[in-house]
Every structure is written in structure tokens, then in C-alpha cells.
Image (cartoon, rainbow, N blue to C red; front, top):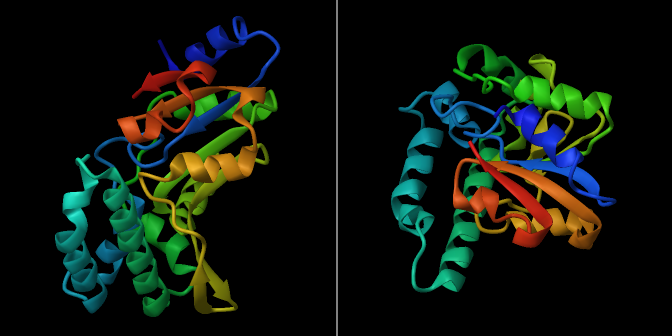
Amino acid sequence: MSYLENLIMLMDNVGDKEIIVVCDFDGTITTKDSDVTMNSMAKIAGYDSEFSKARTELYNKYRQYLTPSDNEEERYKMLEKWWQQQMELFKKQNFPPESYTDAIKKLKITLRDGMPELLSYCEKNDIPVFIVSAGLGNLIIPILAFSGNLSMNMRVLSNFVRYDGDKAVSYTPVVTPMNKRAHLSLELGAFDSFHALVFGDNDADLDIFPDDMCTKVRV
């Protein structure tokens, strides 16, 4: 069943609740073999650059926290610390704002078959789409725009470097694999007014919405 067919079937069976689409970006909207947005600027800077070496050091220090553990509270805190330190590196590196758009030409980014049709249908039918990603929002927005899939009914909750003119000055509150539901809750308020069609390629993506208020599709 295609992504759009999942949505149309849900629309016929959900009752009076508002339908929303919630999905990850890397590996969900994009294919598994696409470049990952949070890692892509290291590729652009060069793997021998100080920026890339610093990110590799962070990965080696914190990668153990990517998998579930007996102490999920500690894991949550360490992932948040890791993402904050990554965003500090992006701020310090101070990539020019236009470099994210320029980077698309050098990256391997492919949208999954059927995703453009789903996003187009949502736009035409005014169905809200929430893309909640632990990736880099500064890349996600231009990727969607250049592929013709950025629309007014879409909200991207992700990690954004903030600029004052051409200078990187701060970043948004970090989105990690563990805190996606919290970010979506801040955006939506109470979940019980909605029924979400949730797309994701792993459990962290699919657990973003309460089980009894959503339909999950693993991609």
C-alpha cells in the first residue's frame, strides 16, 4: 500500500478527529541511502576539516547512547548533551547561510517513491504535515523547497542554526531521537483532538504519538 493510500484509507475511518501527518525526514521522507542532513555539512567541509574531526570525536564519545539502555533517563540527558555540542560546532563553524542551499548540489538526497504524492495531496487538501527530525533543519527546508515539496501546511520541527545576517549566533532547542514527542506536544498542545498518520523508519519515529491516537506506518 502506498503512503497516499494509507492516508486515504484513514480518512474514511477516523471519524470526527482532525487528521494530521507526522513523519521523520532522514530515512523516512528520504531513502535509506541518502546523505543524512546532520552529517552532510561535514561532507561539504571535507572529512579532514577540523569541523568534521570534531564531529567524529563527538560521535565516538556519545554513540553508545543511540541504543536503548537500562537507564533511559541518563540516555536522554546524554543525547541532549551530544546534540547541543553538535549545534555549538555548527555555530562556531559559521557556515554562510547560502551554503546549505549550495550543499544540495553536492549531496546524495533522494525522496522515497510516493512521498511527493503524499505531500502534494496533503497540501491540496489542507492536511497539516509535521516533519519532526533530529537532523539539520537548515538543510531540510531547502531540500523540500528545491524538490517542490515545501508547502504552507507543513511545519518542520528540527535543529536550526540561527543567523543574524551572515553570522551564526545561536540555535533552536535541540531535537534528538528521544525528545521528538515533547517538541510535537509543544506545537500541538493536547494530542486528543487529532488522529495522526505517523511514518517512520524506526521506533523513535513511530513512538512520537500516543498509540491509541495514531496509525503507524514503518517505511
